[in-house]
Image 1 (cartoon, rainbow, N blue to C red):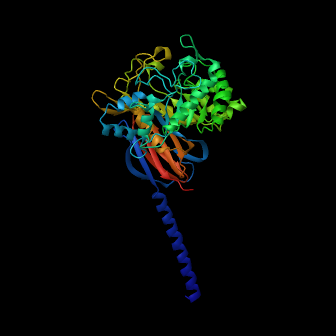
Image 2: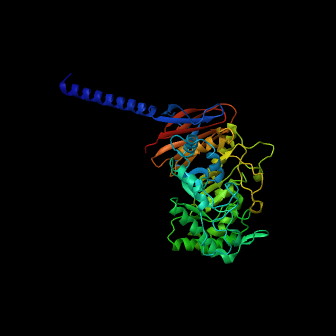
Length: 490
């Protein structure tokens, strides 16, 4: 063999060797893609980390299984959480100090707990502001200048500012503040007509401003103010009146004062009402410029299509599901005992969360974060729609007699979303999801991937998950939620 030919053969072999090595390294790179796996299940897993999974090269053609479709982008996620209420602080304060911190950590720490990122904090009296009698921040009749305005109760040992500050030691979250009722003296007639008297619209706007300023002075910034909680159910104000108050009084006053808090028009009691009432405000060009978020409650447990239509009609305005819970007063079956301790109940909540997110919701908030073994303590003020009894359910149950702390099914399913689907994540498409399984996928701000898989079946299942040209088989325990996470470099 002459030297030039030998050199050519040598170079050819070198190229083949390099190509072979590159292919081998590529295969190793595919297989080395670590998928972090966290599971909660009826079998006993509770946010349990399982051994990593690894992608392998997908077979050519359109393989069966769930497909992650990154090109389909939907809403940006704002957060998940529950509500600060005096009832929760009363329960928390019944525990020894170290145990109190463990509960707060379990709710708000993003590493060791659920890492809640969106929380409700109501203005004054509501059904679980239970540390004293019904109250507002100014119960002095006719005080239109708010000279007697005070948030003193919120600064007490069972108060919401105390609660919020203790929670913030463990995590950060947005705060959303709605109001059941203004001071009674602003109503037409507290006994017969609980609509707001229009002559007090300016006074009520000032009341909201004083609340925001007082909280900020106390070290708590309110990210979103929502004028009324379930108007028509509590304050009997109509949506056309809310439009006037929102557009002509509250919005302009907060703007003139340079207030950074953003506005929500009010809290629609259910999805159907949201679909019916919000266009009145959103189609008014002046009112619309004050709207930051459209919040709604989930008590109809249906009509997700109404939310999807709102999202399609106003795609640039986030939708938040800001309240839902088990409560006999909310037509929950009285033959089922509250609070519920069975883990399998969480599947119901996981299913509702998935349906709201698929409809376009950017945040999902439960009602009480903490209650006691009796589903309380609740406030009693029948004239304000707060009956006795008012037994409800919460993610965390603290037995005030024994000190036992229980984490319910709703805690674990909500935690899988809040802990792993952080603010700024973008929901993306999925396809090929089999019956009995729910799948939602997200791209994180860091370009990672998060997939939530719910198995509703009473039997174990397994699914193939395909991402780009890679696939992985995932075992799903019976009645479970499984979170998968991996780095998804572009």
